[in-house]
Length: 191
Image 1 (cartoon, rainbow, N blue to C red):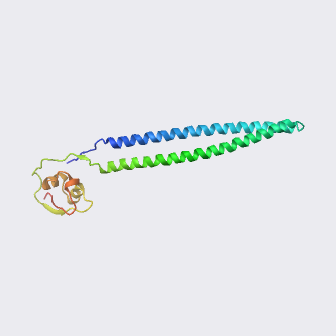
Image 2: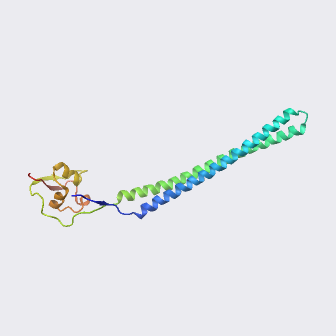
């Protein structure tokens, strides 16, 4: 006899999974935007460094021009301010992103745990016989259900079939009707 398992669609699980996907997509977009801003700032710093280098070259070529040296000092000072501002902004952005990620991860963790809990507690729908037949071997043995036993495992170990055990003991739902310590009859053919 084949037992068919049917799982039911659980809207809470689907909603939790959808929320997780949306949150992850939002995080990816935030990280992409931050990465783009960092690249732009790096390009600006590189351009300022090239400008600074060009000015140094001009200064070396023309030591007599004092105003050029003042401009170079001003550019160097400006470049240093930009570097300091960039580092401060980078540190602030990192702290903000880490705080947001931690908060979103906590929310996602709760949603995933809730989804796992709802899946773990969901009872599968099993097509079970509601009409029992007397067509099973009348010879067999008594068996006391042990922790971890399943109807299929008992049938396999004892050399019987699930259908015969269900019919002989009038078991509708094995996960509910099969209890540890319960003594059941295991029909076994004498062939």
